[in-house]
Length: 96
Image (cartoon, rainbow, N blue to C red; front, side):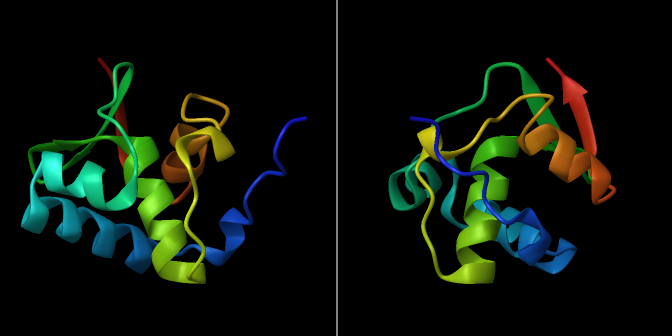
């Protein structure tokens, strides 16, 4: 059974920026260990010349916004998922 799509409307740009800052502060390995995601392979969120994994960033932003932790399997990461949500918020996404 497919999981229900997370309520992305509960996540705002500030939550995403907070997740980006957390990624910068912890570094990739500790960030993934703490928040339960893996490095990205297809897309990158680009901000201030730095590259980030969109799915992990959005999942962490959701956790900050709602207090609910998402697993990687709880939502799509690609064009129909995290990439689409982040693009709609005005973030720059590049195909790798």
